[in-house]
Image 1 (cartoon, rainbow, N blue to C red):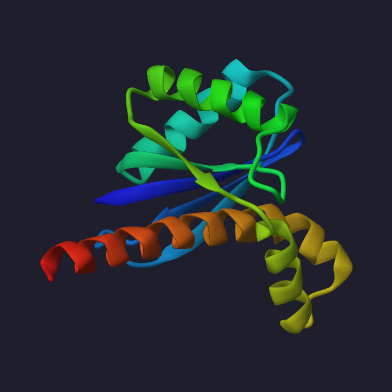
Image 2: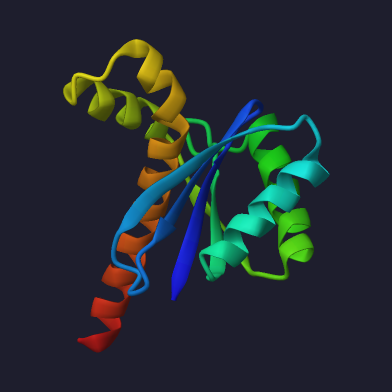
Amino acid sequence: MRIMGLDWGEKRIGVAVSDPMGWTAQGVEVINSKGSTKADMNIIKEFAQKYNAELVVIGLPRNMDGSFGPQAEKIKALAKLLSSKIALPVELWDERLTTIAAEKLLIQADMSRAKRRRVIDKMAAVLILQGYLDYLSRKKDLQDD
């Protein structure tokens, strides 16, 4: 099953997809928001179709204490709307510190600041999706025992 991961921000949306086996996440695109939820969702729907995604995982921004702030509530509403728009299940996944982790990885790769700015959202989507895929793998391993 292929899964698509999203790091949904105000200006950009990072997109990642899993391999067909659902083991690894690869970054595929950074969508520059069109300023319209409907237009952004149409683009996401095209990506879901292109990659034959059967599930979408969206990063849920939680506060460090685990509580939900205004941005998390917005993402919850977007996830519900997206699910009805693209006719696929949408899961939310804790994205705390993914952007910071993505930034550190890109710095370690000696990437310039300008290039990091262009790809950080895609990398954050990869980290969100990989975290979800790892969770599914651990869950399956526990069920097999």
